[in-house]
Amino acid sequence: MGRAERKAEAREEIVRREQHRDRRRQISRILHKPAAERSPGERELLEGYAELVQELEKTRQRRERLRYREQEVVDGAEILQKKVLELAEAVRGAENLVIYTGAGISTAAAIPDYRGPSGVWTLLNKGRSVSTGDLSEAEPTFTHMCIARLHKAGLVQHVVSQNCDGLHLRSGLPRDATSEVHGNMYIEVCTSCSPHREYVRLFDVTERTALHKHNTGRSCHKCAEELRDSIVHFGERGKLAQPLNWVGAVKAAKAADVILCLGSSLKILKKYHCLWGMNRPSTRRPKLYIVNLQHCVFPQWTPKDALATLKIHGKCDEVMQLLMDELKLDVPEYNRSLDPIFSMAVPLRPGEHDSHTRNLIKAAQSPDQPPSLSLQALSGGWFGKGCTKGRRKAK
Image (cartoon, rainbow, N blue to C red; front, side):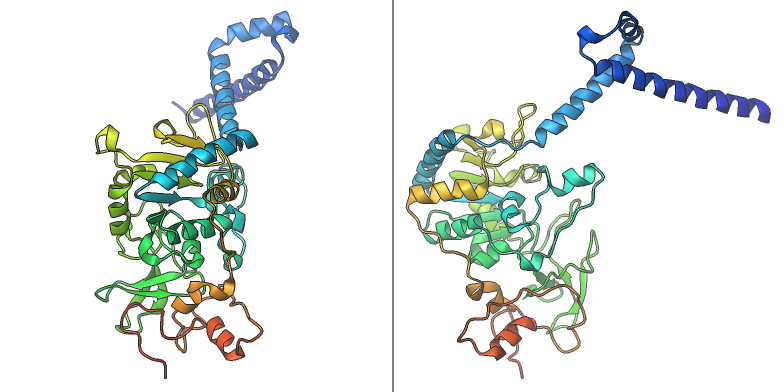
């Protein structure tokens, strides 16, 4: 085939594509009209392009399903109250209650979720930019404080969190009762030391890290090897003992007779089969309670809806308020001056203060607090409690 023939064929292909696009637009405009308003010519055109009509109808239905998935459906007040009463009975009667938390419990702290109407993946799929804001300003939400209170009351044995925001730690929930299976943005680890040496910081340590790239640029105080963050990205498998604490998560799941899921679509957690007790006989599997704002009928919004004893459609803070009222448990407000992260934090060493540009979590300044304490906290932490092993007293 000569050059002229190839050019002619290419021009014909361009014309065919343009004609097809025009035809799609024309048929799409007709389909948007009510059937009664279509002219005989338009109806004849639709009959002549039945395959294209079917394709466009499938596309429309797919978009409608996606749009419906993004809707936030909330149970009415009466239904919500009735469901919370049932949940409260389950909490009281549970021998081993485990809570699984997702991004939905942190949205009240202005931290975006992933699959809600303003979630990270939702906005990215629409081609819109995502702003995470200043996470150093975030504080534990009412739900975080409720969970810590339930654990203190002996009603919750363990919490498995998908969140990396460190808010469970900052709520006062004990470390041994927490599994942050996707890591903690305030913790970096030395994997050369045995056991691993953990450093809690007052800033986001992930500034220089990414998928398969975890070194933070700072070094271990004992062996001088480079520290790494604790984050588990999509496509990675978390191998750190802490803060992931998979041993604690699996042990808790094996003993659980009730699982409460808060603010999670469960799209990721469903893949961790060890968390659900599905290998047990059906009569001995844990009862599942789900609290999530999003809901969809086709298909179910969370992959565990069909297995749930109860699904509550509501905001986590509102549901937890009703639950705590029913359980007659007071919930302490978050107090920054009591935030455990300040006593856990390991101070940066000389020469490391320029190793990051992230904002620090600012300590609350009480009227009777010496200024030097606040300065110590703001410079990277207080001496004496942060590193799990081998901490040397500051000189």
